[in-house]
Length: 216
Ligand code: C5P
Image 1: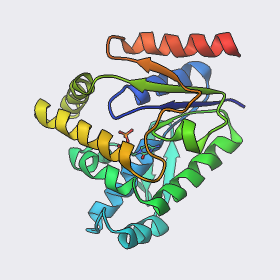
Image 2: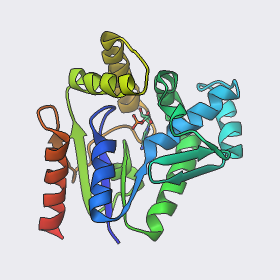
Image 3: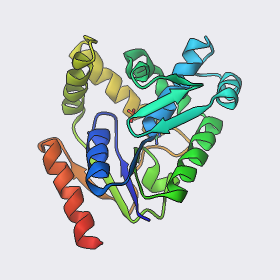
């Protein structure tokens, strides 16, 4: 079994790259950000507060999360597209700060990684979820480049969001994710850092596949 961790800030290209690497290697891809987004979605539709630990505990205790490559269900409802709404992105970092939510998500992530080869993307995979992963990558890019990519993605999904507002949101999310107490966004000591600002998606995928082929 092989474990590959791909961490990095919002919009660094992790999910696109990890999904493709999974396909080429024939292993499972798990988007851990989608799990925190699904908790956020459920909290908001039940009109509870993303900043209240008691509310979050109620939500997460009752939440049945199901994941399959590229898809996620919350209490039986397919929320794959709904969790990409800008309102979820603006709120998710508060949910992800909560220690109990994190514990539940990490338990599920480790369970999935315990039975099969996986590539997982997130913020704390190399540092906390899979500290013994054989391969760890940390993807970065400037906030401006990441906002540009998000804008293209959102545009395709039918949301028109102001570029400057996206740069601000990305910077704020980086700050909240890096400064939180529980498992903050941090580069694992043994991770390979890839700055994707000037690279195409294919170039990043090639770099990762070469590293894996060379070391395996
Ligand atoms: O990767 P994505 O941008 O979809 O992640 C959404 C949010 O979920 C992040 O901003 C972060 O707050 C949280 N997250 C996390 N730990 C992970 C994955 C995501 O805290 N492993």
